Length: 78
Image 1 (cartoon, rainbow, N blue to C red):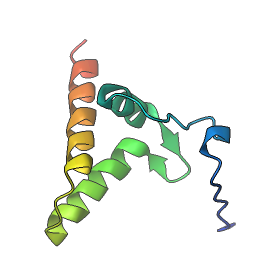
Image 2 (cartoon, one colour):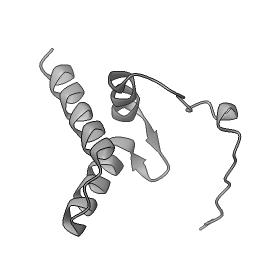
Image 3 (cartoon, rainbow, N blue to C red):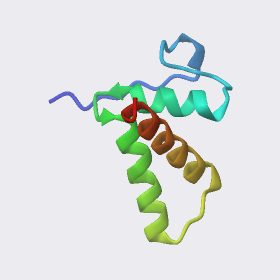
C-alpha cells in the first residue's frame, strides 16, 4: 500500500478547492465530495464528534456540520 502524501500550498491548482464561499455552498461541496479516505461529510461529522468528546467547542466545525445535515435533509426530502 502506498502511504505517501503530497501537500501543496497552491490550493488553486486543486480542482476541488472551493476558496472563500458562503456556508451553504461549502455544505453542498462537503456533502457531495469524496476522497480516497471516504466521503467528506463523514470526515466533518467525525471531526465534530471527536472535538465534542474532547470538550472542544469549535463554532465553525459545528456550523459546517449542521449546514451539511440541513443540506442532506433538504436533498433527501425532494
